[in-house]
Length: 162
Image (cartoon, rainbow, N blue to C red; front, side, top):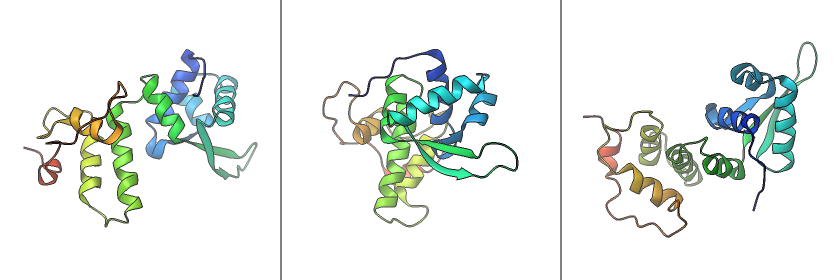
């Protein structure tokens, strides 16, 4: 089990990366957007990298100064973000659906991707399926018990708005 002490700085960094496109960002952007000092951000990123919460995905050379190192949340990082309540479980479920579609080599615009895109919306009051049941079916119950999949979603309904 991963143990990282919760701090406001760590939570802000984790929350920012958890909501960045593709769960990917870099230190200067995180510092700018969160209002944290660069040294604090890089200390947290170093800890997160050593603990497997993030991984370096690419390094972009800079015209001046240090190259920009992009980091991305790992599965461990996504679980920590959900545990610390800095990432909505529905966001995590949407990402899992996209990963499943990619692993199955499904064509663009497939049903899983459409449901994931629906889950990415901030307002889910209009959807015609039980979001909580879907999240439980994808991620398991938050209390660790096994989730059932009966009556979760009709794929035709998932991509349409009333």
